[in-house]
Each structure stands twice: as C-alpha cells, then as structure tokens.
Image (cartoon, rainbow, N blue to C red; front, side):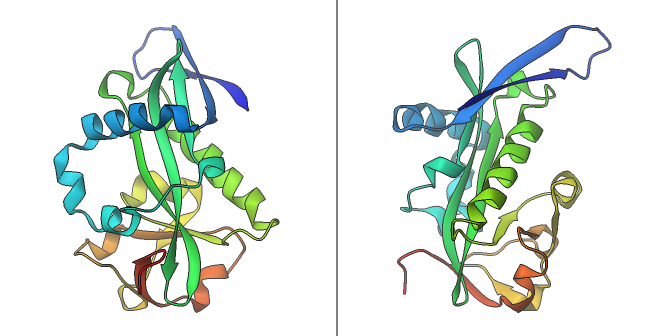
Length: 185
C-alpha cells in the first residue's frame, strides 16, 4: 500500500517536496538498518529501547518507510514487547535521513504507524504503544508520560521520555511492571 504525501519544507520557498509511505518489506531490511545506523550511530545499541527490540522481528504490517524518488529516506517500526503481563507495541526507531529532515516524513510515518496500530486492535492486536522519546514531538500523536513507578526498562532511560499511546481509551491504566523483549523470561 502506498500513499502519496506532500509537505512543505521549513524553508520560505514554495517548493513542494513529496514522498510516498508504504509498508516495509523484507527487501527493505538492509536499507532500513543502514538508514538507522546513519541516523542514530552505534550509540543506539546502548539504549533501553534497543534492548527491548534486540533480536525480535518488527511487525512488518505495522512498520513503514518513506520514499522519495524510489530512495528510502525514513522509516518507523513497531515491535511487540511485554509490559508486565501484557503485550504492547514498542515504537522505534523512527528515523529520517539528515538531508531529508523537516520535510514532514517523520510526522507522516508516525501518523501512519499509529493509525495502522489502531486498526490492528480490532484484529486482536495490542492496545497500547510505548516509546522512549521527546514528549513535545510525540504528544500530538497521543503519547503521554508513563509514571516512573509503573514501568521498569532493562536499561536506564530518562523517566520524562518514557511514553505511552493508548490505542483504546484507558488501555494502559492497568499496565505495570518490567518491560521485556518478547520471548524473554
């Protein structure tokens, strides 16, 4: 599925910059890994969010890429994790190549991922998404801070950056405990 998105860049010119959003496929895996490394660098491996996704396949039907002129310029992935006794989605990484920032690709990817996850709830999918990121950026997509006493991550993270988006109103109210990779004890 491909949608065309148009967005103005931050410059004062009136040039339009368009890109397509589509589901990530297996053929995109290596390009997305390369993009992620370019955007986040090797430091990403030390982060709490990476520890939760490490070795777990992202949900391909809930992971999207942004393409401009057939080149992948951005991506977002959703991966199932455990939060206490419940299964939720972990968003990330969300990345856009530096030379394509401020075109709206990151926000378009976010809207697409959250909307797809909401639709997936009706098919028995998890009813909340968590992430570690900037509240000001993610709040417009429905993310709120998780009280620090409700979640324990496998590595240190700023408690102000641990966020949740309820895909069903009030869904995360009863969640608590350790966040763990799917399949880990």
